[in-house]
Figure 1 (cartoon, rainbow, N blue to C red):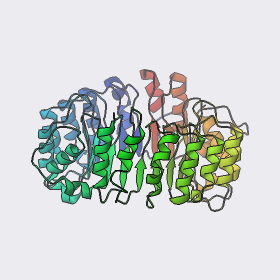
Figure 2: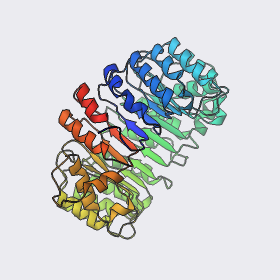
Figure 3: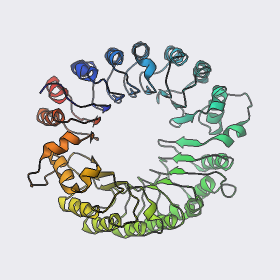
Figure 4: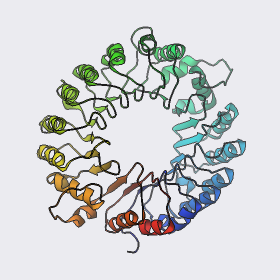
Length: 513
């Protein structure tokens, strides 16, 4: 039906098996969005020819955030992108896990970083298939000597997964020493024998992240615990994805080393660590000791109702604002403990999807919580991939929100094709059930709502539409989505990530043109 008529700002086409053929087909679509400032095509099959096509987009559009992780781009394609007309406006560039990186690619990136006109603040570089060499650190750091914008560099390629490097103004001048020493202090890779003072770096660290499948043992836990005990300014700690089991002595070494820690921790991520009641019991004093803690994630663990009771004890002591419990084993009993805890009213974000199969009892518990006048909740994630989310549950949650003035987003899990996120405006809040049901129906996500309301009014005012997680698209579904998009007037963010099938040209035309 002709070109789309909405001011798109963010587009996510990751994990769709896109290559040169697909990019060639949708090139006019990508070039047509003057307001587009965020583009993700990570996890595809884009080679150097595809990178040249993306460079053509950058010659036309001032994209600020570009994610190219996990493709097949080497120096030739990288050079096209970095030399494009509007590359200087990029503030975030994610290019990790492409072709194995070498000195040629590092030279290309270093030349880009050394330009006076560069706006880059965030760079992700490297490959899980190889180690990131210290000489490459040195070259990147030298290129940053006159750079005043860079604030974060994510290096992929260490022995134990990526470690993120956060750069302060003081650390920028001596970047190589900072990164090498910090990496060395955690035993991530062998580098730097210059005997510099690690204490100075550890004392000033504000964020430490160990994402992705660490294999921890007692010695490593002692090492990390010792480093943490020397931190003075740490605010964010991520220890996510341990593949082994935590014994009690490992937990004591990790979280209670040398007495209580002495830093103002605000955010703690302990997700995907196989934590259960035993582990939570061991670290309960640690969790209760952080008065400043406002964000806690324990998603992807083995936490049952007894574990939920322990977390409720933490909430009786600490005013946590963001709590993520997704993918555990919590049912109504545990949920009730958490929602009735002393400081539950201060929660602004609660993620409880994919626990025990949800039912009317759990929905009643959530609805009672949402209807309280003192509730501060803005974001709720609820439901389970193992079952459909029933329309009567929508109705109950919406009725509880009639007098609620804080909620702005609800993420519903349990539709036939994965989660769909519902964004709530003030106008839509009063008639929430119709809004959610109609929007779900318009995309054929689940069977609900026979009230004949005007779907056009909802589509016209939609600003964000997300279809994450492994859609099985065919031509008919592409036509349906394309038809809906052609009726949007205010859409700014579109996510169509993870198609498990292959895109034929007629599907791409139906979808984007």
